[in-house]
Length: 322
Image 1 (cartoon, helix red, strand yellow):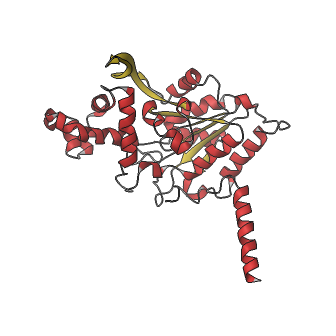
Image 2: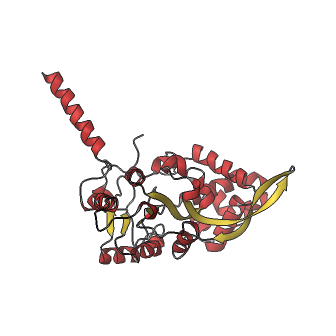
Image 3: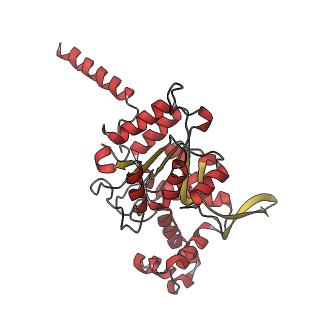
């Protein structure tokens, strides 16, 4: 009898789990808002119904789909690349910001400001073909580990947000990344990690040109900025590369504010902010953070009734199970 009871309990647990498309979310207003919007958007008789062709959902990446502390992961990639290339550039021992990076003095490196960052990005992201850059990123993602949590960066994706991505796709939504990060950096791993193919990744980019190597055409990456997909650039990127306005938008910082405002200009749309409130499982920061500052967007989102996702309260799990 006890054995049959345990089997029944296991069966019921599995059925309930299978019926819940967002198992890493605690019951509450944030989870309900997502489920209710999608339920109505896919019901032809609902006032919020969205035709399949218009089911576009956009997501910021850093801080929305994976962690972004203590620095954006692409910047940490660039710092690792400086160290890997140092033997080829002995002059870097006396040249900032490279000297600071090689001495692990991140404060001094940060003090070099925008000009220093552009120097770092130039030597680590250009001067190679697109195929060479892709392979470099692929090797780094496979082997690098987070400096504080000591796990691969792809283990620091947010499981609750991956569930949202899957849930939306199951209901006919097309999911896009719209990020200030480098588009070629994200395209290498986004499909494996999020299920988002390269053509649905929008990000910042540098210029490339067609060239020839060993009698074959290649695309060479140049040390020139082409497009910055951040702040006011995000609506521009959405228009340029998607051609349809989103009906759902997820962000986490003031850098996403214009994307959320662009979505909000249409009635019956869904806007959400991931609020980093969990210092124990992830990080806690918002208004005064130098990374992922959430200030103006939090005020406007609260005022306008956007969904604010409280990481500590709304998620029963932050990262995927090991």
